[in-house]
Image (cartoon, rainbow, N blue to C red; front, side):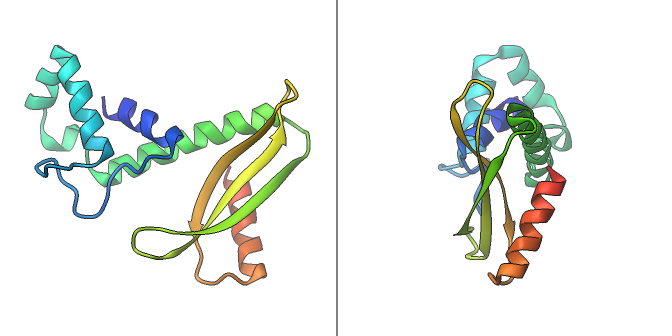
Amino acid sequence: ASIDCIRHCVPQGHALHWHGESASLKNRGNFFELHGHARGRVNVQSFVMENAPKNLQVTSTDIQKDIVNAIATEISEEIICDFGEDLFTVLVDEAWDTSIKEQMSILLCYVNQEGYVKERFLGSAHVADTKSMILKMEIELMLVRN
C-alpha cells in the first residue's frame, strides 16, 4: 500500500508529507490520508498493517524518500526512452521548498515518437547560489544522474 500511495502522489506532483506530520493528527497529509484510504479498502492489507511492526510499515519519511527516488529513476528512464536520440530542451526555473531554501527545478521539453510535444519534470535540486556556472553544474549533474 505504501508504494502504491507514493506511486500515485509522485506523478501528480503531490507532496507526500509536511513538517510536523504524523498519523495521529486530524490533517495527516497526502501520504497518510491515501494510505488510510487504501488500508480501509483491503481487509487483508488492513490486518497486516495493523499487526506489522512500525519499522515494516514503510511510512517513515526516509523510506518514502528512497521510494520516491526509485520511482523518479524509473520515470526518467521512460522519458529518455520516449525521445531517444532526438533533440530536447532543458527548462530551468527557481522554486522554494517549505523551509524557504532556494531550489532549481528542471523540466525537459521534447517531441515524442508519436509527434506530440511533451514537457516532463526531471527533478529539483537545492542551490546555494543562482550564478550561471553553479546552475550549469547542477543541470549537468541532474542530466548525468538521470
